[in-house]
Length: 317
Ligand SMILES: Cc1cc2nc3c(=O)[nH]c(=O)nc-3n(C[C@H](O)[C@H](O)[C@H](O)COP(=O)(O)O)c2cc1C
Image (cartoon, rainbow, N blue to C red; front, side):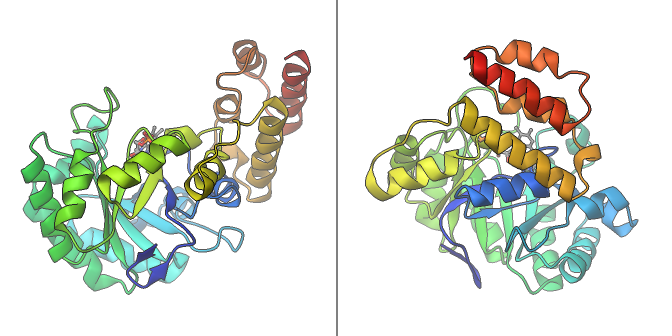
């Protein structure tokens, strides 16, 4: 799959997720078949104010290979400036504009999914960001209830210079309830010439294959299914290649992934930035005994302690 001048190794992308897709997690997913990953959303105003945490969120390293930075904001001028700074200091291959975040905290600043309600502003943001950087600019949207209104917005974004659009098939009001409706992505793909990426509720190879067929989309973006289960990318990739889905990772494999993730967090100096207990708990979702594991690590502050408790969990299962 190509986005503008950028060739991705495949068409399975890791979704940007705040407080999830830090550098270490992106690297783990890239090693397990994710073709490309975006940083969590980075506040463009904070970049202009030199905020250290936001700069760190936008950082990558050679282990990751090519990557994208997602920015959010409400002002064409600020977002364009921030994108320019990030291009020159962090060297992303793609800049993505967040036009889908449903959080009231973000919406009340006029950013995230609020931008869809001000299409002139969103269109202007895309134009200004495209003008200020040399890398392709993509946009991640949700949907309006009305399909044709959604297609019209996507078409305006393409005309403004977007190189690809990701469509999460839920309205902002839905937040994460119900199921994503991929009819929107299908209609947008029919109308636009740039790549369209479908997003929402993709958890396995069979569904991914159906979705590619149904929407005609160029790529798929996977979010929650990858939390604690980076192997989801390899499972989907294998299914798309030969129609077989290998089983989900067992307890020992998940422990190995968690160990790999915790080591990377440490080597990138990020372990203080994440809630270790919450992140570790993702890796035991659905396993027998995961509840007591979660309880047992609440006050554990180091990786070794967490891994030894996971060893106990696996030995008991
Ligand atoms: C914890 C969490 C954080 C998220 N943060 C972002 C974000 O920073 N930027 C964004 O565009 N979407 C964000 N999303 C939305 C996801 O990128 C994705 O669109 C959504 O989860 C639907 O895909 P899924 O069903 O594969 O999870 C977030 C979702 C979750 C669950």
